[in-house]
Length: 513
Image (cartoon, rainbow, N blue to C red):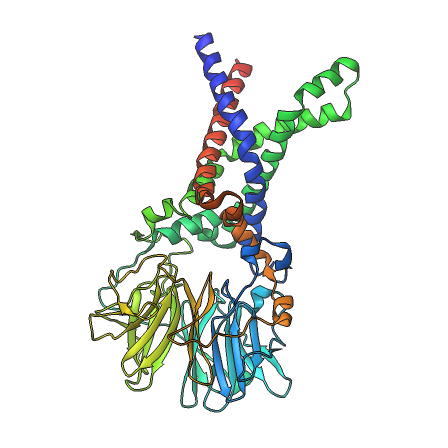
């Protein structure tokens, strides 16, 4: 019996020791970047110069979501906006001046989803961390103090003197008075045949980040990140230095400081690992499903929200609204949501789903614009399409052919559309995440990014952490194999944590007996 227990302990030790050494390097950066990502607004003022990053993270031809759209104010005054903030240029689209005064420092605070000019000439901006209006007298943007837990505003429209804004959960309306506008929150009604479900992906994401339990949950996951960092460091130390420590013991009769530190670290490596192994396994397991290929298995799955969790909301549209467009001809709103496309009569609050749905990537819509009477331009990572809600045929505008596919759209198509630009001459350009700005059915090339924009447009710490955390940062080193970093590291991490706990239990019981 004793020999079988000993063999089992040796087996656990092998599973824990060698895979643990390999995975500990990855877990070091997972723990640090995970904490940064868990507190995006807190770290929103921290940026990294793109010039020190690999080439694929540097801007070229307005790629990497640098630009989402533009607003033509006059024949010689144009605003362009996107992840670079807001910049003012002329009809040549060559000379740019920063239009970001009033926004907090940090590229995350200048992530712009929409810029709108109302009939009375007031400018409004929907950003990742709030809704702003431009104060002409002070020549800067002013933030509206709106009490919402999701600060990400995605769209702005106006009808007459009424301004409408939308974040990911609610619509807001008020009389347009620039920075003096007062907004009223409007909760949209449940659609017919409403089923209270959320995506399995969102559920797993919030369990992984801890957000499912609000701030206490996020802080607990932060603690697990610190634990992961500590276990990785102490594991590396004990792997490389036991022989050296043994020699120090033989040469000295006294306990040296380094021996005390090693014993202390080994003791707490075992105890902390044993106390937190369940939480660590859940953390690693949920992380495996947030990136392809395992993401594909859950991408379209839906589940009931976990009771009393952050996802269990009374608002049926909580964190589901994505874009808004006013159709002046039909006097209706078009709503893009994570549940599909809807329309809604003005002054009503009940969205009605369209029977014919356009192809939109699961990663969300990036372009929603009127094209011609009754036809709309839809852009996402699935591509760029022309969609008429009354016609079953959908046109692939980027490739000039009829779309052949289903309404959900491929997660990633031949063109990863992040925006659309129209210049003062009416020429249209689509914006691809990788390729940048591409002319649409004409040969007029869009001017290159000027040096002053390149110098100011850094990468936010949150975005850099995301690229590292998902493994995309290493794509240049290991090619397409980077897609396996997350699932393999999660699988190995679970094996290391579980084998370490079982090994500790064997030795703990043996010591007590």
